[in-house]
Image 1 (cartoon, one colour):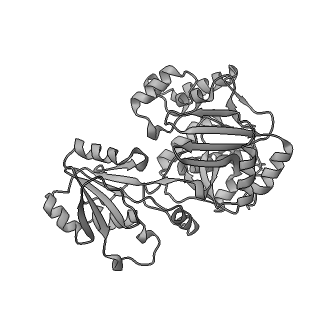
Image 2 (cartoon, one colour):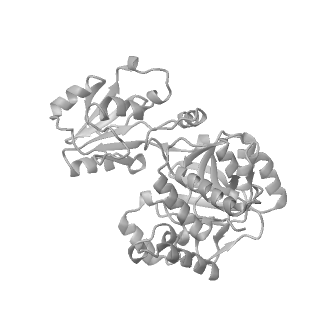
Image 3 (cartoon, one colour):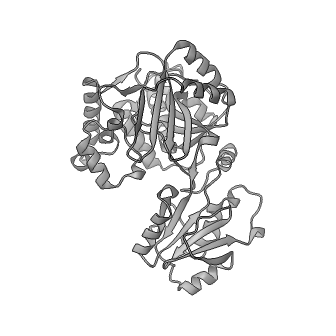
Length: 408
């Protein structure tokens, strides 16, 4: 059982929520960022992703001053009552409904809240500095849980009431939030939520590591800490696994590693059956890939299944592509750091792959079948980590819709 609690969230008060929230930077280019900064003075991007003069040495001070100004002008306000927040995200025909709450950092340390990715210490430290600066977690950690019918039915019942916020974000996702403060409803939700045995981090591994570091920082300052202080909790956005959508996470390699097209195809065919396709090709099953080069799409199917063992990781499509194409043929030995590889989320469509390759005719792109959420959960349960850039969860919870101040 995980320790999950309601909290006093800080949320938009004297400003429309859509003007404050920070869309995922994955959907924004630099011009988008500049436009949001110019048009929406109060937007959280001024704290999370400063541009222009805010990139100077006093960035943290400017971010803190902006957050204080938001509170002083009642642009945002902390709730007076402990609350759960029902959160629904809709994009095209996809709908996911879950909740915002706070969870105990101890459950992450004790592996009841489980991750599946490695983290970079520099990015983790940057996140921690950013949050410590304003003593606030601006964006929730997106987690999934094994579907609990009682909890999910209760959540759906609570969405029958009028929401506090309902709007479309920059990336065309539709967001709806209900604030649950009635004591009976809060208690009912608490009972159902705390039946959850494990949470699985979908997106936010660096934030999670940063929150652990922040908890350690405060506990070192307060040697009398009992473990139930607000800084020992962190904000989550939790959705049932059946509603957590994973897109493909595709690759573009800058060149063919000195090979001609015919040499490259010949080497590919050592491990994959390769067929030309008349249109763009999106894989329909595991161990199948699309490949695009010189205005030509191919389907490539892994045919050397006898090379695979029962190890869960070796059977992942990402590892098959890494081990039998990217490393031995294209010379990509370090996926994390090789400058010749780029990653493009499937939410941008195959057109994004085509454009990237057409802009650089020497390059080659691979479309990949989306990772299954059950594989993510099994990897986490086995305390393993997936290869870099394996999962792309989308749509994501927004930063700044509800924020968690540590000093409450």
